[in-house]
Image (cartoon, rainbow, N blue to C red; front, side, top):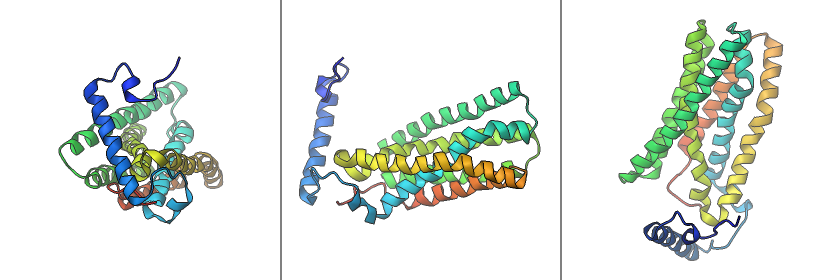
Length: 242
């Protein structure tokens, strides 16, 4: 099966959609011609920009929480809250199901809000800043509550708002345009995958050394703080001039 390379080649795209996409691409190419960035594909020039590092650290912090809950969440419910296998299954389904709903709703809110004319900075900083505050507060709450059901509710709230940060996948194209969206997306994903392999090991060492999950949860809080600072630092309005 040959995949279409241009919008007009796709049978699901009508003329109005194709014209809108082509006009957007033409405007982007014209802007790139003016600043001399058209056709340049490189990562190194981006290393001097704050928004690049905010993008990478934000995704690293996000994955510090997400992969931590993904890999150690079920064991936490079993060992710290006394859940059996059946209860762990349903609790995990509820927690990550909340994340599924949250990611879709967060994207819908962002699209709806921006369609009213709000700036990208206002929309993204408000939504992702709110997300970070709720995640940090929820994780701190989990460290102090003793009731298992309350812990599951708090973790569900955490995951619901955490997945709003899935909006980060729009950032490589915002900062790099079509030319460098792939390069920046790879850098962002690389930073997230650092958390992906470091977090499970770090949490295991913490739990093994302390005999409890309190400091592991605080590790997640630290990751969420990194995420929160990053999402508020990043400039979502401006393509980086490289």
